[in-house]
Image: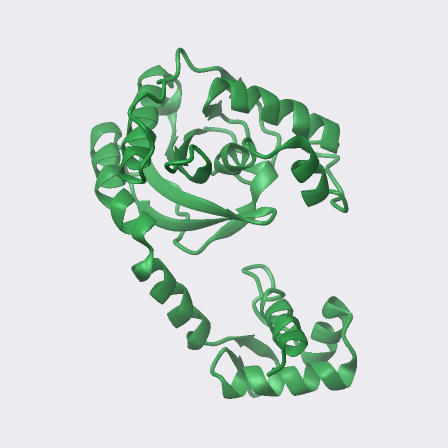
Length: 265
């Protein structure tokens, strides 16, 4: 498969999402903008490789080959292995669900999860991809970008009316997030859900990942102790990644409230 064909095949795979698990060939043509003959050829190749499957009605969906690749990546990720005991300890300390995520373009991808033992908890599966700008952990991951890089990343993005209305709004929010060094939210995306997120840095002090802790219900109202615990955990993982031990812990959290976005993670 040539490089251009590979790029097109990957673009087709990315069309399949949780809210669009199955697509017909004409739907793939319409969504991808590729010629009909190219789409049919690539769909055949992806089925042969075990990355897509075709049902009896002629509709396509992701096959187990994609899942195998994803889990092999997760299993081979040094970051995931280093973070696991720290995230488990954070879950045990707070009884909040804890997660590790990285940014891919304008999205975040969850690499690991340690679920709270609480009766009511939110289920964000490993491998879930969400918009970076409309999630608390995504804001942490975007907060290190230079202004020009951020503008290039969102140059063709259509914002809100719900939530962040413009690139200028996003820039202002991320400047505040960067200065604070963490994001603490109660009901920012979804009523009754609290999230605290903090960055994971490497030896160059670049943000390479983020962690969060999430909870639902009345116990999620006071974020001060949770913020300190999440920051300590993020620093512990950062030190395992080679960051210096002098990273400052945050002061009292700035808690944001109000349901603005579709997701809270």
